[in-house]
Image (cartoon, rainbow, N blue to C red):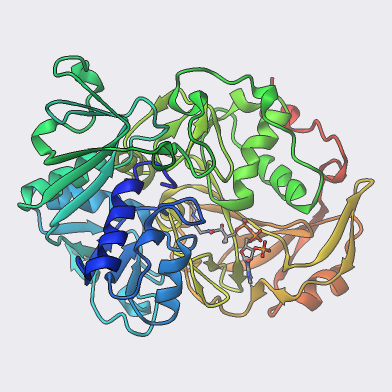
Length: 494
Ligand SMILES: CC(C)(COP(=O)(O)OP(=O)(O)OC[C@H]1O[C@@H](n2cnc3c(N)ncnc32)[C@H](O)[C@@H]1OP(=O)(O)O)[C@@H](O)C(=O)NCCC(=O)NCCS
């Protein structure tokens, strides 16, 4: 996730060797979430034509060189649900045939909707639809693993690996087990090496019996904890950060959206926040003095504390526990998260959401598919139109210029969340700065509208479909549009 777990220096050497000698080549890369800093570090190092022929990942949006090769049809690419990717390693490690799950049904991952293929040259299959005991499932087959490329903080002389400078543990143990049991090799980059017997056994996250090579990094740039920092001790749990050091967000339409989403937080509820503006809900809770009223979690493993927005996405300030990536998805998939707030690039009349292919660009779902298929209370959030010009002032929204394109369309480009597959017990809201919809009986229903917004001119005329309008249409709380709000404590209780 981000820079965490990625062996940057090893990747740089592989790239340099390929450019010099033409070897290795034709690789298939499999990874969990996005890996890299969104600039030149990370899996994007492998973005040279010929080095990689297939790339399967949950998120491919910020590895620009690789993403370009996918868009140019120079590489096969599948985007899979993050929980599926990180849990499939365990099936491979244990010699089982694959992962059987309902995660992905009805979405772009489902073979009836393209089978997770992200461009025209992708002709390999990574998912099958099967019937088991009379019910439909997706089956993600195991595959052989020849090399595991991993990173930790410290290795001892026996190759035991610890993660004390990291903010995440990731899924390295399962990946190493899979590669080792397939007869492959396991390479782990670390920052430091210590003598045999100096690491406490409980601190070992990848045991030396699985590790073939340890590479000690020569540069700190290769050991960044997150996309945006070399080391923040409040991510690793070494220190705790005073929450008033988290800067308040400037008042704009995304803050209004984050505040409205925060109104749906459940007191004491386990809460997951997605990538993008949904991550700002944690900052709102901190600003409103309510961080301790909910239990935030991130799909990458931290529980408790305050999830950090990009460029530290996936890490949490002051987490109370950090568990393995795949263990977190067991909690998510089994329904252990009470509420989630996730991004929205497009929504349509069936309540479907697209975040995985935005304006033709392959992005991938991250944990979106897993989280939305199992969580009871879901808030999708995003601005009402793409690139509107708007001002928030005096408890109102003022629209200066309508957006360049619509987000509420007849059919989304890619189904990342399927409204049809939503369970009757799920409460699903779509929050924008102009209005709020709820999925009711399979129909998008307008339930709230912002003060200063005209229903016909600013909402209906800028949608490709006619939503149902609630007979009880309410005004969005004007406090959301003021410099200071102070309304969250009353909702979450003292
Ligand atoms: C969908 C997603 C891109 C929205 O991001 P966001 O920061 O909340 O929302 P924004 O509206 O600011 O969109 C971000 C960028 O996406 C693009 N975008 C979003 N919606 C778009 C649309 N309908 N048409 C064209 N571009 C769009 C824009 O380029 C925008 O950046 P810019 O306005 O600065 O140029 C983001 O949520 C994402 O990457 N999701 C996939 C992964 C995920 O959701 N994982 C969940 C758990 S890990």
